[in-house]
Image (spheres, rainbow, N blue to C red):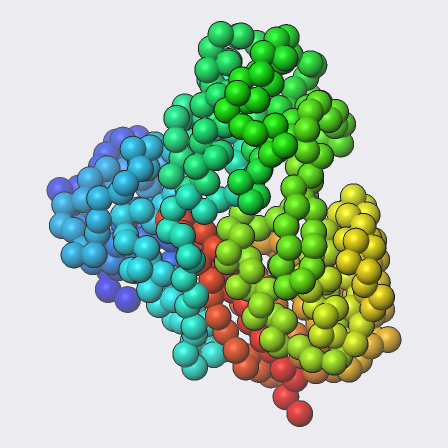
Length: 443
């Protein structure tokens, strides 16, 4: 790979001088994390976000270790023709989006090119890229940080609050609720609120205030919401939490209105509570679940990391039997309620650790299909080992992290081949990539 020279920077600088200097580099490629990178003459790799291939840019170093530099973009000197002006006024200060300098069409094209190259040693066929129906206003949930009577998002890799009035990724009803809360907070200053969480579905919403104790004038806030929203479409909770490392605790108090949100997909009715996990882009979530449903027939399906059981319930429509495994007790209880709500008889929900339970299920159901949707850390090695040893025929892997996805696929080795690889633009305007990979055992 071609190395990039320093411009106007001399190697006889001492370390402190270099730390404060801005350097000019030419970006080579963009990696799976959405970072542009290049190499200096001394072999040091430089990574910086919000840049495009072949651009000459001024960057400032923020971190250096073992021939690696992480930098921030200061100025684009020579633009890639595909670069566009970001629409969001907070783009360069918030950090939540890192792809608004590309049109949505070209952003998805770049993601496809990145994934195609990254997996080229494992898959040499066409990777299908599935577009989101919405480029903006697609997120159905937001968690706002509250500090010193200001509301917004925490700046990327920082505790600093970026106060906002409108986030272009959120459904408009969330931004409306945000500004109601902001106006109330200005008039009713309090130090007891840590976060303000809003979830919406089908034009209804549930608001959760994360507090250390019940705030004063809560009735005034409720009245403000009742003036702006139909009461039958509104729910309100308090969540009591003094911890700083997690947003929500297990201590809930229902204050008003809806206790959960309702929806239906593929004939399955489901409820979403304020603590439930649900993909933030509802349309893309539906597209992914449709694809997975197409991949199964009248077989036993084992779903690992099954959450509140929505996909398990959907798969039960075509499967001989579905077994969902989830470690979170509250999620498993919701999965059981979902099963009862839809009168499903061929579904079993198991609460427990996937790395303990899935290997045993692999031994018991060797002719099954494994559907796994693990966290960013990837699928546990105990499950992958059991899949290989028991010669499971088919795996459908839903992944939000291309790096751990590739590591897991490589672990399965030559005994499995990828038969279908699709990416979904679950998070437009960001570098995040959602993948669905179908693997079949080589006979």
